[in-house]
Amino acid sequence: MSACLIAEAVGLFAITNFDDIVLLALFFARGAGQHGSARRIVAGQYLAFTAILAIAIALSYGARPPWQSLGP
Image: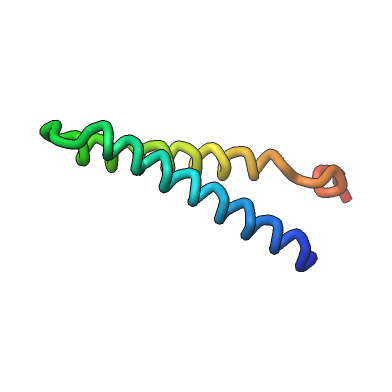
């Protein structure tokens, strides 16, 4: 794995987390003063992350290079 690829992945991860913080701040601001809104926001965040992680893992099993699917 090249250093450029790793740096790009780290940069994209950081940008995604910044975007996530902004969206969460907006959700919490909109739900301010409403009973149970923080719990629903946090639960939704965990459910969404779990779904994304499950999809990424499932797709990674299908993302094999062509030479690995060839027989001996």
